[in-house]
Image (tube, rainbow, N blue to C red; front, side, top):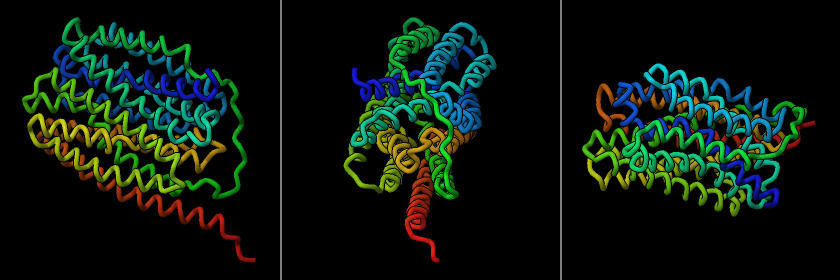
Length: 389
């Protein structure tokens, strides 16, 4: 296997297994909550705390990945994820235990994501970097797909704990293909203003709002569908369908990005507008609206992360992990606020209200993406224009 191909395989495997614990928990929430006793607000809280800790860990983890390289950090993330899933299967005997295990392990996801970004920025071919990031981000819906399949295949047959045991085995099986790069590097000196921190911060806020809405798809879709009268097996299979569509669209976004000269952030904004329509459809009971809303929500409303990370890496090739960690702070912050807000609205009002609020939030995110893009364009123009003598 050549270096470029191994980089992509390693990035995908690391990303998939490092995020699997939280999405496996979300996909199996009906079975887990029946045993441990918590409602949608409880699910929202555990996922929210998971991403809150991830937000705080993002910048330090970015510096660690830049310093020590993708090889050691990715392996730590993979082993950590395996330990977490085994711990959930063995020791999560109460809601508090589940929260403690998941929250204390959130750094595994952060480290895995950023080490994968560094791997691709170093070894993915320039003409295929967009596709490489699309493949890497397809690992997120792949994790959701595995969670959806676990409902009828494992949770409804031998029990949800065995799904986590299998997940731990999958994580360990991914260890041999994790990135082997061991070369870290010291931070590269920069001139003031080289990194468009202001624009990246606005985009991070937009990404946070988008993530607040889109992350609820993988977390609450099954519980919402069951609440609207859909049986658990159909709901799980619908989640699997959405994951497949999201996976395909992330690849398509990456493929198209390699054939464009720019405007990647604008494409992200357009995808969010259409994805908001999908979330709104999920507020309408019925299998047809469930399927269409899931396809639009996953295919457009949650297919943008790889394209956005690709754009950020292109802007900051000297420190890709550190730069993407800025945007990831917003993404993880949204992952904190979204489940808390959605779970609260679903518990005290209805799932329909929660989906409609999510759709509105996603529209606001689309607008802020446009603002951030304009700031990036202005920043680039200012750097390219010689200062007056």
